[in-house]
Length: 162
Image (cartoon, rainbow, N blue to C red):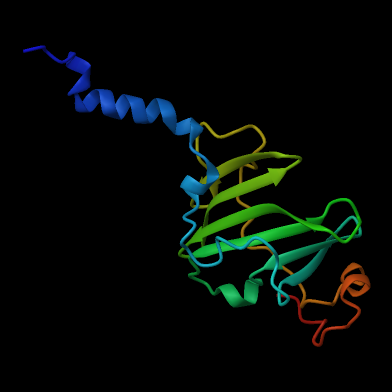
């Protein structure tokens, strides 16, 4: 009967393997896709408006819809080229109202940042902010000038940012 190598049956080997592979975990392993609003590809029509350097941003869900103990995702889309084509650039994942992960999607590359109690976890990427950004604020859909040029309508309650 052939003997198995000692490392094959060792729980220590399994733990070491998982630790060595953990930096390679993708954002979708840190952000549970089954959680509320974590699987959204395009912004829904009720996604909030914001702007970055005059370019339209869409944020969903809006902060007012999330609640103090929200568990799920908030997604940000940006009109990167200024051509009214929105591209997903960030997904924030919250557990019980606290930021746990940020997935950044930019220029064809993606990276993730993980947080606990609002602070960046050790051994994170240099691109990650030391403090979580928290929930993103927006105004109702159609309230920004850049959104108006796309949607051709004006939303009600534009003076009510969340």
